Image (tube, rainbow over all chains, first blue to last red; front, side):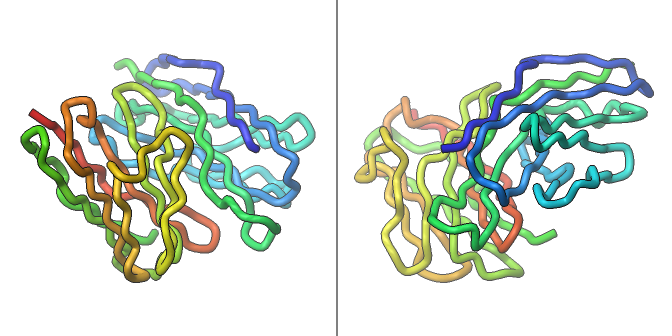
Length: 119
Length: 113
């Protein structure tokens, strides 16, 4: 079974500053995907960024980037130039890759980090 | 990205009645859909995995007779909360998976009075 750990229940950052959210995971799988989801007050889950485990290059989406350390099973999210609209709950999630054998292709979530961006 | 539509967004029902929540994948066929429950300021708790044309797989501790899941087509899954009680009040979210990603509905806030 997979586990995802987010050790920071809450964080805050000043507008325009940079913040890093931590995530570690545990799995015996070799092929998998990692995700960061954002849940704003509307509670709609929004995909922020995705990383395929077989890719060594860290994923980047505009102001969002990850530091993926496969051997250490670490997957942190860096938000640059933080904006007020980034205020949300952020969830790290793990999903086994399709065709990797067995079953159970569900998403496993961490407990989340509540990020507040202050003006 | 793909769109998953969940209805209703909110519902209030009387204790003892049943309520149905629909989850539709609008622009892709989802062989697998997931139903989650979320309490305030907590993570998503997986309730069940719904596979088209077969019985849902429930997570440990989830009452399958209370939370009926039907996945009759590749684009529609429903969750029916039967004989609802105030403790069933919560935020319910559905998700549909394509090959490499999961897409989420808007969620349904259920209040049982």
